[in-house]
View (cartoon, rainbow, N blue to C red):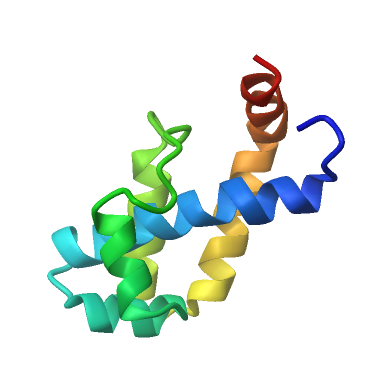
Amino acid sequence: MKDKIPCEIITWYVLPVIRRELAVMLVKNHHMSQKEAANLLGVTDAAVSQYLSKKRGNADFCSGNEDIFEESAQRIANGAPAKEEICRLCKFLLSQNILELIQNEGNR
């Protein structure tokens, strides 16, 4: 893991978790279909299904940050571009030193 550049870590570990959290909130809290959530998030219906069943994006480093994710899900449900909200969440997680946490987990 220590040889990976930050962008690789974000692509492989952070983005799937962000998408999973948003997909779950859009479907469960905002009563969207998997297809609607997929369209908003720019992923396939199958990806949303995998997020909901935790087959994809199954790392759990978002605990305690549910409010900020729900805020983004609400914004997306109200028409905000998902790309902007995903970037906002990624920046938030980076400010919480998520890269170090993931790298430390990978080195164990």
